[in-house]
Length: 116
Length: 116
Image (cartoon, rainbow over all chains, first blue to last red):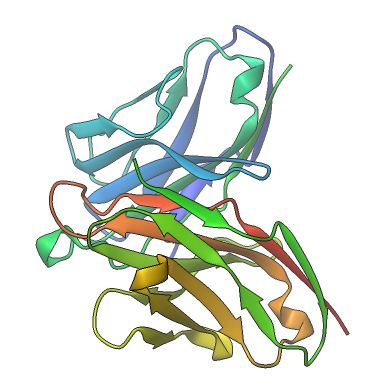
């Protein structure tokens, strides 16, 4: 049972480069999320999706883009990498529960990104 | 916008000591409350959650948390910690229901180090 799989685990980018962080889940979850974790700052929501074809901005969306063409995949794209995007990125997914209550998030193992 | 504050960035204890990690949130409506834990080298995982009912909730590995609505708090406790409890702990809050889709706001995290 793979759960939520993120690739790559580590990446170093130069300023201005672009890249895509991959995220896939095999639990048939409708909800998927991208968070970034900065030291001492907790996790901040970047983008989320409530189903294939539906995405919306979270708390810190600037500099990122997402797409959700399938239930399984939710890639995060950085178009012009900046040092401020140096962070650890976590993808997560969850069931939809009656009333919109989010029972539990399943997290991937994270991607450590450095922009130099 | 709601926010979550964890009182301590780093807590160091000896085995068998009692633990209490503070968490306060700022939101006047109905909330769902969570504690997540990240053990070294592992994914973030759910420790316990509160949705409604008994404000004292019990989670895995002997942890419990008490929701005190009047204090906007959801402190995590364990009577006797073990070396294996060494991890980073995150408090999280979600608006209950509505159109929030269960999006979680996380606290800054507290690193717990337990010495044998």
